[in-house]
Structure formats: C-alpha cells, structure tokens
Length: 199
Image 1: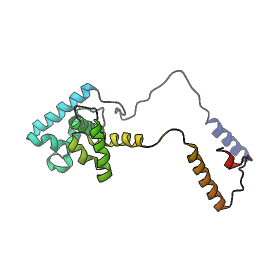
Image 2: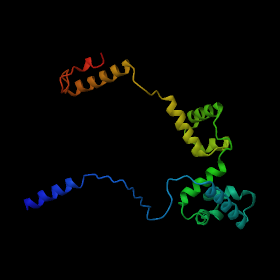
Image 3: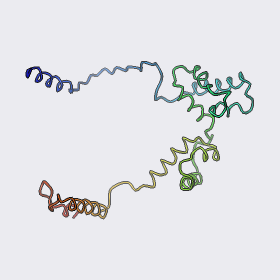
Image 4: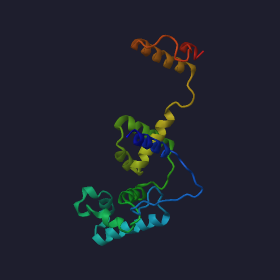
C-alpha cells in the first residue's frame, strides 16, 4: 500500500513538467463558432443586408430598425436575432447582436472631442453609469461610452513611481498595524530595521 502511494506521488510530479515543440497545433472549438476575432467588412455588410431584409420581409416600416435593435420592447420582433444570426452561422448570436448595435449606433466621426470627454466626466458624476441615456444624446454606442469612461478614469489616476512621502505613509501604517497586533519588534525576519528602508 505504501509503495502504491509513493508511486502515485511521483506520477503527479512528472505530470507538471512542460514540454515545448516547434509545431503549433490549433484546435478549433467543438462548436465551430468564431470567437474573439473582429468582424470583417464583408461580415459587416452581410449583417446590414440581413437586418434590412428582415425589416422589409416583416413589413416593419420606418420603426423597423429600432424594433429589431430593441426587440425586447417589441413583441412582434422578440426572437428576430435567431433568424438574423442564421445568416452568419459561424458567429455567436450574442456577438452578432452586439455588432449590429455598434454598426447602427456608432458615430461616423470615431474621434472624441475634448468637449465630449468633459461631458462624459460630468455625466458620470451626476448620473453614474447610465451609458444608454448619454449614448442616445451623443449619437454613440453605449459600449463606446463605457470604454471612453474607463480611459478617462485611468488617466485621472496617478501612475508611476511613488514619492518618498507615500512610501513613508505606507510603512508607518503597516508598522502601526503590526504593533497593534503585537507581532512587531522593530526588525523584520532578515534583521532589517524597517524605518531605515525609506532613508
């Protein structure tokens, strides 16, 4: 019994080894769906045509595009994306739905003006993350609004090396917490006096 356990342990260790080869094998997903790749211009055009032909075939009229894009609000187009997605069987239905929204709702001018960026900041301060409301006013897609806010927010944060004062505040906070717990003697395990690290 002991021998079997020792043998199993050695097998587990050997399974952690990694081997590399020069040949790269790509295994497509079993579903055959394309994932993580941009839509090509042909796919974009095909998607536009399929949506427009769906609207025409159903006789949805002027409001047809809005009814298809916001099908949850309109019972007559409730399951329209199942039929539309059948024209692009290699793409997931969800990605087709989101791509159609981006194609239809995006602004022709893809650049953001400084005024628009300032508007996004002020909107977020006042209304939070209700990007759909702001997107309809600016004529941009709600996902683009969210992504732009993330870019703005990350530039506002300070990045880079910490100033000496921030290191001092961090070490002081850690030292005081460790004293409260009762585990701090003034030196760490290596014998380094902690207050001298920042000097």
